Amino acid sequence: MSKIRPFVAFLIACSVGFSQDQPEARKIVVRSVQAANDDALLATQYTFQQRDVTRSLDNSGKVKAVHTKLEEVLYIGSKQYTRLLAKDDRQLSVEEERKESDRIDKAVAEANHLTPAQKVKREADLRHEIQQDEERRKYIPAAFDFKLLSTCVLNGREAYQIRATPKPDYHGKYALLLRNLQGTLYIDKHDYHWVKVEAEALKDISLGLFLARISQGSVVIFEEARINDEIWLPLRISATARARFLIKRVHQEEEVTFSNYRKFQTDSRVLSTTGTQ
Image (tube, rainbow, N blue to C red; front, side):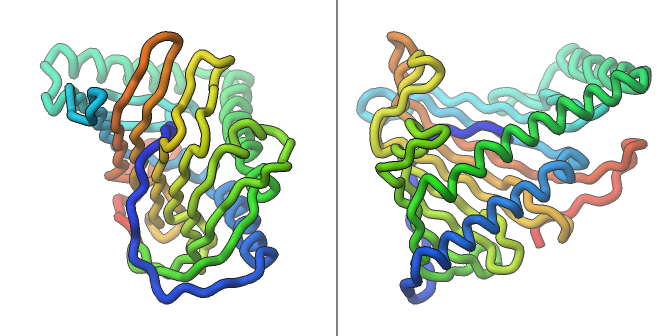
């Protein structure tokens, strides 16, 4: 759920547009950042499946190869684990399934034998990861100008459509990244969560000490939905990107879909399996 890769955006039908002053739009965005933070710890109580489809493209945009991976994602003892379920639309062999099950069983056994100090450390590490995500989001309101464009209905819920334009004079943290992105936020009118985000790279962006460079025009789409009438969780991340890693050029499309959300208690008993509300 943490992958953020640039992708081609698509159009969405909205209701009649209207303009509002920027302070009002900014207030909505600030509230949405806090709303995302409120759900972070609760999300670790859920297990789910994610299906990753990657298409490698040639220079003309034709598909060269397609690879898929289906995984189950779960938290065991405050630590995230993935269990492979299928690869390239092929079910695992008996031996592969056994290895995956053994690995998860080992993680469960390890979690059950943690000392109190080890449990505290794991919980602290998890909270640190959550705080890092929160820390990255908090700079968004300062780095962009916002304009409230319209309202629309997504997944049966009303949402604000807000355009985010980077401030050229922003010099805060992550400035080299944030100054070169623009996009549109769709924010739920009731819960203030991000129902959908579309972001586009305005210029080539260097990442990881210049080992990777994301090309201008790359875009990402991220969608969430309300689950079990208590939390917002990812539905889809889709991306297409032209990038350079060292001397290798990469052109690919990727889509990750999330499903089968189930909530667990500490005894790993399933409480519910519910779709979007």
